[in-house]
Figure 1 (cartoon, rainbow, N blue to C red):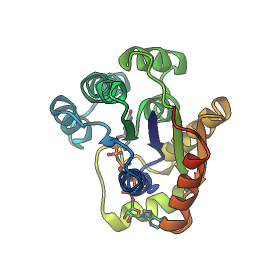
Figure 2 (cartoon, protein in one colour; figure 1 turned 45 degrees about the vertical axis):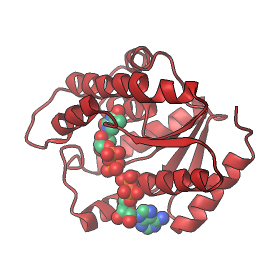
Figure 3 (tube, rainbow, N blue to C red; figure 1 turned 120 degrees about the horizontal axis):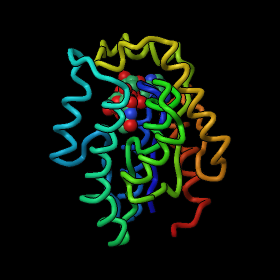
Figure 4 (cartoon, helix red, strand yellow; figure 1 turned 135 degrees about the vertical axis):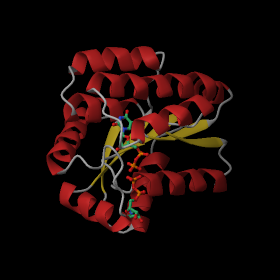
Length: 203
Ligand code: ADP
Ligand code: TYD
């Protein structure tokens, strides 16, 4: 079973994904936790290129690099783990490319979908938690964290398009994507995620 966490930068998705993986470990579920872009040696190297704020990059280049990192992670880590019966929890997956490079950067959505599917051998998550917070809250959190990597210097219009993109994806895949109100306490959010998971039998 593949479970993915999505959201705009600083939405709290990494916090929730890690807590959820800890919960799976406590209940003795065989699980692994991976992050994107990265999770493999090749992917971590690509991540350095992608997040280096001094590089100018076309949207197409950015998209193909994210896809390349994901192609490696999928084949090297995710598919072998799924074949051994693990629950795989990922911090971001293909929906990030649709939301950021498709809706955010304005690349053609169908092209992004096709290349993303090719990159991951048509693997689709079984369950996705989209941690949703208002863009202004996310920007406040980024300022507090003093994060200013290449993408985080984009400003609110960009993150607004990305957030709306995620909401559009949820409309199209309502049974897979769960929109979670990320403005609450960490524990409240995590409780809701666990409850949704427990009400869906593991395949
Ligand atoms: P992301 O992976 O989406 O960038 P993180 O989990 O790294 O988000 O969290 C971003 C920042 O927001 C961190 O400083 C974290 O401590 C804080 N944070 C996470 N969840 C919450 C929450 N529910 N309420 C307030 N702050 C939060
Ligand atoms: P991440 O490390 O998850 O950042 P954060 O924890 O701050 O959300 O992701 C790094 C950045 O890469 C983030 O701004 C989102 C972006 N990204 C894309 O634009 N497209 C993608 O396909 C992925 C996986 C990430």
